[in-house]
Image 1 (cartoon, rainbow, N blue to C red):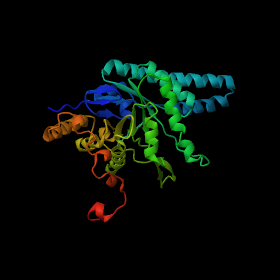
Image 2: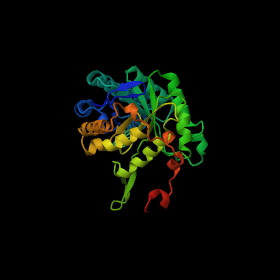
Image 3: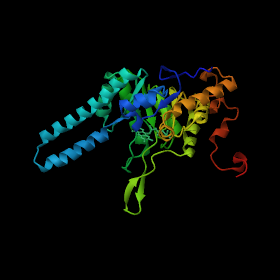
Image 4: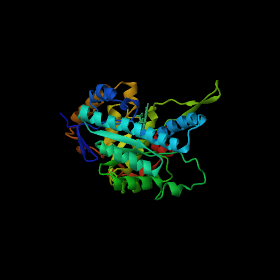
Length: 331
Ligand SMILES: Cc1cc2nc3c(=O)[nH]c(=O)nc-3n(C[C@H](O)[C@H](O)[C@H](O)COP(=O)(O)O)c2cc1C
């Protein structure tokens, strides 16, 4: 029987399937009854968001302002709300660690530098095995040049700062929206982080034509969405100094095999777990195991990265993106 274990961020995982952060990973009941029971190797908790805490504070202060509280009271509310949310999150980490006996990955999303540090140190103190930084904010200030964001910019500063202040493995879950994506991936990989997740998927907006207002778009991914992470995992594998984890539209055993073939160490799933229920993890693992047996691969190391660009005898073909007849055959 094939050995499905893999190494990720220095952790030895029994399988390569990770439950990505989502509503399925924000409470102990779902972690226990849905994910652990169905063989997730590790779980990434839904992030604690600085934004959400700020929003709660703003709602409270607008109510409190109208009944005459002063600035000192407001500071106190700010402190209380933040501590209450952090306590709830760190309790979830501690309980998940105690009850699940698999590695638990905490996750944070902040915008102010001091909060990144403070949240990270709280996750470390609660004994999260590793920490995923969900870094992205929409650049709405069009006066900021892209090099301020990318080249030695904010992403690198946050990564370096947190690495210098914590002792647990740090991963970054990034978006594909950079002008020179390969360059930023390489730069980030040299900061001391242990892994990069390619890529985060964001909540999109849509517009309601009856109510004439903004609404949320479809939250799940579509099958064409896998192409981007496959492309960039295959391109960057062996060119970075950390592990790669693939994410977005990994919906079954075949897509897991493809991602491993192009060089990922693990895969993160969300949509497939909502759409096919969490039992789907077992089906995926069985497809992977059967395929490995068929191909006579005794372990994942025997085929991981075989289809990456650096292993190819024709690496240039990986960079073609135009619909030329030569490459697409008939179209
Ligand atoms: C319902 C739902 C909620 C999610 N919430 C978060 C979140 O809070 N933080 C985060 O980093 N990613 C979140 N994600 C993104 C997933 O962690 C993951 O990166 C992405 O969904 C993977 O693609 P997939 O849905 O095609 O598997 C969410 C995804 C879904 C479907």
